[in-house]
Image (cartoon, rainbow, N blue to C red):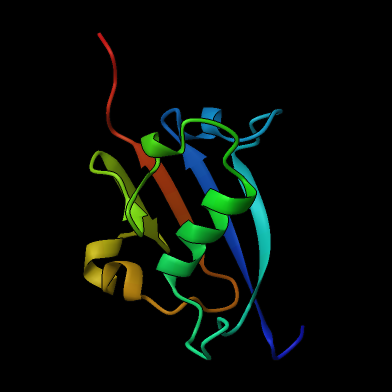
Length: 107
């Protein structure tokens, strides 16, 4: 494992996986740089931007809102609500699991 990368597991559910390129895989193992271009530690905000640029295929407005996720998407970091971890400021660690679940459903 390289000291200049961080490996995280990312999972999509509740329909968020349908925004990804086919075959709409729910689980992804990502290797990200440990720091961004400005030298800041890679955090969940960086991950959201990475997902926007590299994984989303369509209707990114259903996933992102500015530099965060849109309201109605639950984010879990290691099975805990990301609000308890500092939301987008949470610095990613090797082996972290980040789950994005849409809580919005039609009816």
